[in-house]
Image (cartoon, rainbow, N blue to C red; front, top):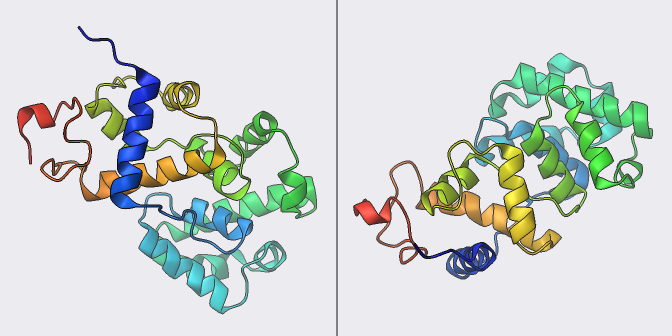
Length: 226
């Protein structure tokens, strides 16, 4: 059995996806706070719906910590209705804003002055913020060198034989951070490319014929699924 050079494989996949799809220019937002709002709203929905919700907030000129803090939760829920689970997500946004206001006087710069491990720990203590949301905030809003993992990551790299079904979020994150360049911009781009590839080609019923990874070992490609 040929031993796989994991670091080289991860770099190869990254380069192939980047060449095929081009830069994804993530995260689509004007400010770090908008990134955070988007990270909470994108839970269990697609980005088109998130954009509608954020546009509703922006049109009311409420896209700031202080203005959302003073907004009644039922009003916030109505504004973000397009994102789905709007009552739950309104509470989660309020929980984060309370965390930011209480701990950092509403100042994102102060929050992002904390070391990565400490801030990640604190974020995970905020009601409604799980590992993927916390890491999206850290990477895309705070520009910390941390790799964001999602279901798409597991699907693609499970098929490529680099992950196992029982691997946890942390194990997958450690796998990438130990075997791929520790670079904020590359972490940013890689996650965005993974999402693009999983949605367009490596979905539940993959389209292998025009896959940029078609010549790499893959459990689905070997079955001639297309």
